Length: 279
Length: 253
Image 1 (cartoon, one colour):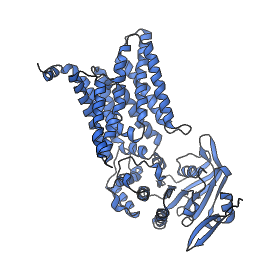
Image 2 (cartoon, helix red, strand yellow):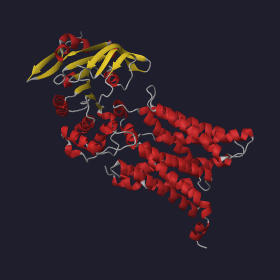
Image 3 (cartoon, helix red, strand yellow):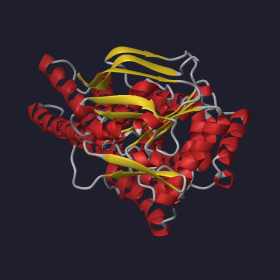
Image 4 (cartoon, helix red, strand yellow):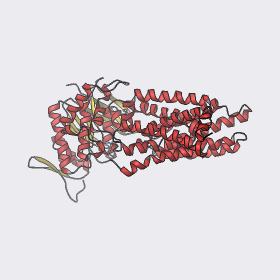
């Protein structure tokens, strides 16, 4: 049996992880346009750390109570809570007057990272999963995670489809939007809320590091290549989708780490734009 | 005449401590009011308070319920990374008139085309905003403000960083809009000379001197008022029909 035939025969194994990778890659690629243009790249890094911390917190809680470890639904719910709370807090911190917004983002990132390490140190049974959580290993995605990812992606599509003009306006020029009567805190909050929901569900499918990469690289690649914002959203979504799916397939056939392969493949899409340097 | 915006004994600022208290100011519909003062003196805070972006920290702010405002921020505050065309930037001025969940229609696009034509950049609509010169970007932002069909056009340092020719060009556009457009103009500038030939009223503000004073152009260009603002004797001379501001050298009031 050829490698491709073996691959097809194993579709029950790769179907859900591949679908999850496609959805997560496209979702992160789309949202990444806001992340890059608003210069909040490290917000997504902090959110992925917070989501990982949420999973660690859920694991510690489960272990300390002696309940079943690796209950995906509980872990995801706690990760969502951490990420959404972090997204809303960081969204507000970026407009603080006493400290530059980056300071709050950096503090959140390093503290969340430190607590992830400290928390992981306390885990007995689930520590082996941490590498997959952080660096990505989309080999097995539980059906519940896939459903959660699909629901969040649909929610984000509805919000961004309906309120595109408001979200673009407050992101591009919040000062004028505020002067014209837009509630900039509300619209910024809504944007960060979608990020706060998207990051943990995508991180469950791809891993934290790939999510950070997918919130940055596809958008950067698209913005280097196109001249229109609408085209940038479309192209970043497509690049996210192709890099996630392609990375998954390459990692399958070559038996190499999935998350890192996805990130490396996404990185290749930056090359054409960097070479062309179109304005 | 009903005012578009009024502050009554207002305290302005942000955080916990007002920058200035007891400010009273009205902007009637035909006003061309320039707020002048040093950098960091509270001009932008006053402007934002007048527009309702910052709440008053004391006193009252009054405006008609449906006041249409056009706003031009400092050019440097508008991010040039965004891949937007001139038309896409200008149409944002219409967004307040379009309900959430709906997209701008033909009427909005007509208003944007008219606004671009009014500021002399009708042909730049498809151009990328980030490829424009500073003066063209400023005109785009003014067009965006005009696309809102405003009763009050507010501008924050619209000529900041411009060369003298571009500054005169921008101010001429504003004067023409004020005269032809039947709208009030409210602008902030740290350069008195930039507005002394255009505004009908001036407001001087400097939080460090606890100074707030508003009056007609003639009254505010008096040596007494100028000395209060600048802390040294300042004279205004007219040459070829234009006013020039001259601080007296080596003398501090």
